[in-house]
Amino acid sequence: MDISEAMTIAERVWDRGIGIVEVPVQDSASFTTFQAVLDQGAERGEAVGAGTIVDIELLRRVVDAGASFTVAPGLDLDVLVGSNSAGVPHLPGVATATELQTALRAGCTVVKAFPASSLSSRWMREMRGPFPQVSCVATGGIDASNAAEFLAAGAIALGVGSALQSASSASELFDIAEEALAVRREH
Image 1 (cartoon, rainbow, N blue to C red):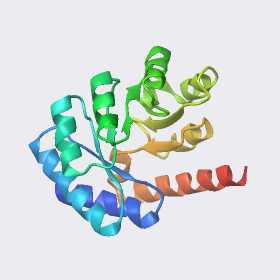
Image 2 (cartoon, rainbow, N blue to C red):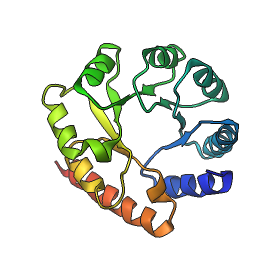
Image 3 (tube, rainbow, N blue to C red):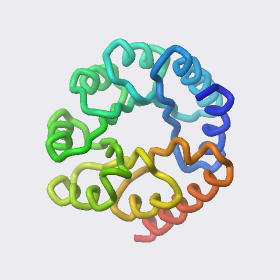
Image 4 (cartoon, rainbow, N blue to C red):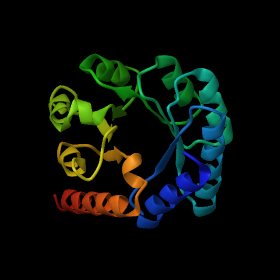
């Protein structure tokens, strides 16, 4: 994603006041995009995290740049421990009970359910049974058609990418999230 597009998406999220921004960092171009969004976030007092952190070298780079948190598509204990040791919260991706249990043993209380649309909101509800202490961020394939069901299943947040690229899709998704959050606050 280029800098302009990433900045537009970040501004949409920040302007609505309902989320934090994670920028996937997979190569030097995406690192430059991450840095630009990070700088803009700092000007606004907004947290910006780095996503797709799959090794220690990349972890060090984003932590040194000032990432507020890190996110990974899977559970790598070296990355988890390294991020936490640097004082930067880490959300590992999990898709099985074993991964969830391993993340909990390693000290995580918040994880990324990935890929959420393949796992399903039912998976999320069922994982809360044996693991009520964990909070899940549903990520991967989240859009206006399934956001409410993941929030109803207990997701504390949604990781959304392509659904934010269109202003109308983003607005629809934000409306759904705001409505779900209002209902959650009432209970």
